[in-house]
Picture 1 (tube, rainbow, N blue to C red):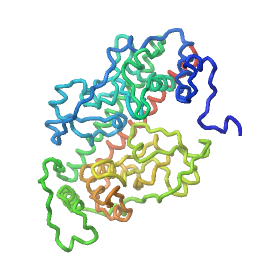
Picture 2 (picture 1 turned 45 degrees about the vertical axis):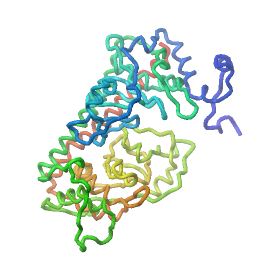
Picture 3 (picture 1 turned 90 degrees about the vertical axis):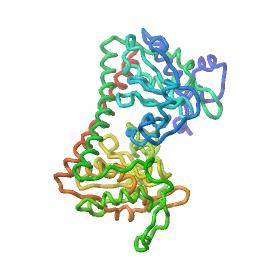
Picture 4 (picture 1 turned 135 degrees about the horizontal axis):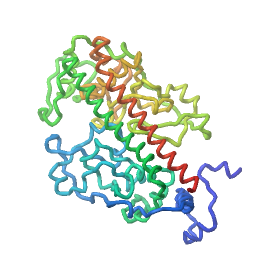
Length: 465
């Protein structure tokens, strides 16, 4: 057996052992922090993180007061939410609590870092995130824009040199944490202003594109309701409680669970039925759910496709270190293809189940969990329309109500195919879906710009200028 046979192995310098107090456990040497530190030492100019920031902080721990009415609440991001593309399903924390503790509130251009559990996951606070509230499990790194371009600082911290240095400051045996003081002295490479500005410009362009995509999706939703004459879904907080309904015996056939017939779902079914023309979803697009498969990963990426879960697919730019064998991905039809609409088919009601993602060029070629319904439209026009329709509140309700199961509900393929959806003229479908298609393109372009920013920065560091 050769050294290369070990996937998680690296060569450790004797000087590192001495600096680390001769620790013989693997963690201090496997993160890549020591290599990153040595690479930064070769640069002519670095500054401490605390010298280029206004402050580094988190919100502090306190009980949360949740509300259901948007008039009294602020969208609240948990640590797992900072990298998602769609904030429409975020819970609401009471405005009065945020007013008492303004540390909850996010500002544009900040770098957000998860600080407990899975630490070191990062996001750049784009314009549409400003004013939202965020968990105490997320560090806020507030750049001093007079000292450093905010986008440049994010590009470094989220690079292959920055992340290991951040993670190396963790403590805790079971649940790891980082505190502001653990990264305050982190070295930040400095280059000429034109280089830093060019890197920052790409990060900021990506942030603006993602914020614009959110506005376009709102426009698509507005067109959906105006063109089809759909009534807006009644907020759950405004629905009568307790939710008691009577069901005619002829309707009470193959489902006996109360949620299926609940007021919110009945309202959405009535809204869709009120549109002049309806067709079963299975008639207007191919609908399938891949079968259960054994996860066989390729040791060499060229023989596999990057594998992501049903939760990963909702992120802005999911990545994976696991490569599912191409044979398995092809046999079970697990590959994502541009133009698909994928829907979460399993999970707790009120969570991701029933929520949709439109596959663009970034996700094209990834293999994804069998817990995602695949909807393959005829073309992009139908794809944009179906995504807009199914991601509406009415669409989410009607998809999620098809799930069944006492512990983790799952959705049946045939039931999804039978869901009747409004099917207007092609011109109306094109008019409704066009903003959604443009939003998908902007999100794909944002991934490219952000990756280019990191590549440019990492090349400069590698060059040791």
